Length: 377
Image (cartoon, rainbow, N blue to C red; front, side, top):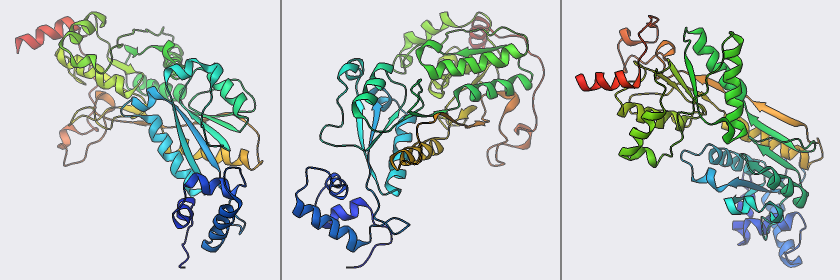
């Protein structure tokens, strides 16, 4: 038989004619596989050259991944992107993953967190914020190494790998203040999650550093389905500040996209009348010709670090080491006038490039005056 350059669990499973889980259990000596079949699988693995870089037989770890159903339903889903990246990295390491999607009812019944039925996992990766009691019960019942991605707690023997929500929003706010913007409004609900709260606190830090008080205005609270209805625009108008800020700092890219759609219905132009920033880089473009100014999280780095952290735990090379923050980067788009990206020559002429920064003061625009302007056209 011709030897493969890189033999993986699925190759062995295909050769023997069994599932990947069966191959994983057989190579780890776990129950549920007959001795005869176990021998066939091990012999096949040896013949195909399934070995580690050091020449030893590679352990075929089975990793359980837990994601809340609300994150799976979201589009675009940052956490599902992280899962896909993590699954790919696990495959490179000779292991495999099994996904468990937890619905709201299961999450609330934290005292009965039985998951991964029929699969004995070696470790768990939990992606996204979930009920804290659920996570602690899961950790206690499973008794395997646990790495939490983009959520954190106080358990000392658990690893937490998180995005830089606090520092990222602080950097984005600092960039706007340095560009001369003074009237900024954070859009979101800080109490909704720890991640949004961290972003709000990062925004507050930069505002307070300049001797000002942050202005929390919960402008956006409609779902993406509601924004498509005609009544939504009328409802959001009542929530807008009487005097619009210079820039809305939205807690997420999806929030920025929906807010921009609603402002557009009111005749408020972005970035001419008001600027908008997002967070997370879920949308590369919020309209055909408009790229969102945002803070981009690095899902590849997040997935890579969480997988290799868990591998070290499984191999006994490290214990839980608390919280590790994965930094991202500011992405300059077209939705904030003074910090616009520099477009390619094909997109615009030099007169509209990012080098020509407009810094003149304008009269403040309100939702009411914008409506009158729209009507006069």
